[in-house]
Length: 303
Image 1 (cartoon, one colour):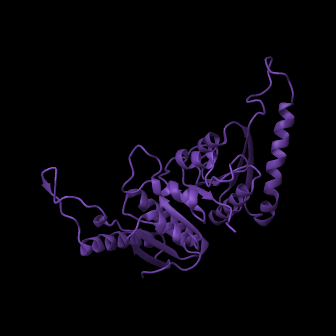
Image 2: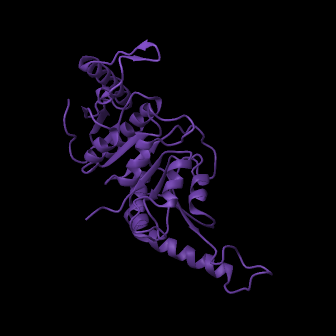
Image 3: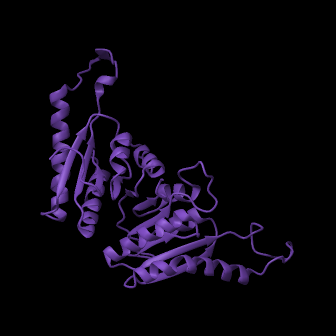
């Protein structure tokens, strides 16, 4: 079936790359858990926008015609559908192929989607990059949660098999908490909420720095702040086992490190320190680029 996805579908961008296959599997499993339809979107590349010469580097250059582009797109969609059917044969699936860049195509359907999932890197990604431009731009600008899926066979670490979420008391972190609790409940997984704080003077008091605050009091205050932000969600999801970790350091690096073995890392698009005009803060940027498991970036709803 081709066309617009049903409202609140789980949407996944597909391009036939290995990372795209991972994203399809992840999105299909998520759609099954949510009881939502899955929408496969392929943005076909229009080579005709480039005015290449007939001869390049001494070799004749043959551009695919409309039929060739259509056949390639149909094959990509068919393969992605088969992957999703392996997760759940009866999963409702819709598909669409558009001839336009992937980011605006996915941004459009994101306006009414439950979430959008993409592979960490697509066919045009450089091997040295952990996240391609499509995932990075969607994480910064999409109107729904964006999940960047990467291979995560490593299952060791203190938070193995859990959902990990960054908490800082901001509005964005509040929306991330809701998404994280929902995911943990769907997966019947434990939830680790991580609150990272910084020393006021750049480090703990020592002989060279006047003792202007008590480290234990500061840690207790930060722990209370984080626990308060969790209380309402704990009541809403009593079945989810919750662990709260409060640590000092740089939040992006700490969350990336704690993502080892996790099923999913969830971050708000911006935290307390974010500038109003930014759609993606430094912490979420670090998580997207350096986490070792799938990463969900959750924005505060517009309007």
